[in-house]
Length: 254
Image (cartoon, rainbow, N blue to C red; front, side, top):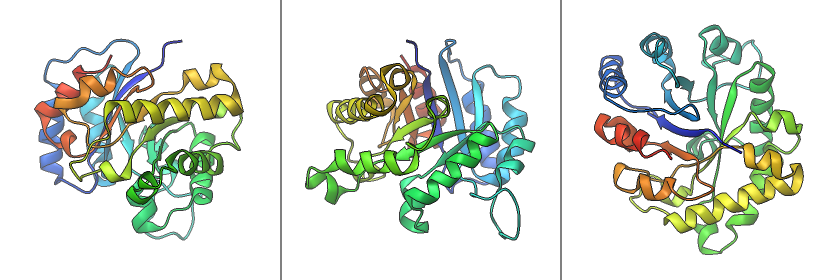
């Protein structure tokens, strides 16, 4: 079956609002051709969500995502952002469990399961990040490590709910280090993730889920990485902050 092919930009904690506006203009006004099964998603800092929503309002297949949300509906959680706030802005996607959130803010698999639940209850599609650090990769236990992340954060969901989740595999050892997993390593892990999902939910559900690669994707390697049969696009960090780079990555979607 035809899965969504996605180029997702993760701006992380970068850019002023003026720089963000300029970058969005430079990307969305450049020629790129999106087929019906292709999406572009900009995961941007919370203060710029409204600005970005206005910018992309008329653009087919282009969406804005939040970089995080909280696990509770509302309440005395100063500084946090609720899914209700996001839906009131028309936001349809949120990135959850990015390796930086796990590492610097101690987000556990169980905590992420709560966030996944509240997003799905409010019709926000999670982009769920999973992936292993260098020590795990060197010990060759990455499959078990990622399977545990999936099991503890996602496998309580019904098949219908899981089908709404986008998965992003990020080899943490390849983020911002200049090291990139080879396209074969990316394909190997993506195939493993799909097989693990199939084992629990069946092949039809597993084959419907988009699995993005998130480890130093750039214009120079996007075509090769995206050509792998189980890689459905990328969650792009640094290269998404350069208009020409990200447009090339969009155009590398299969």
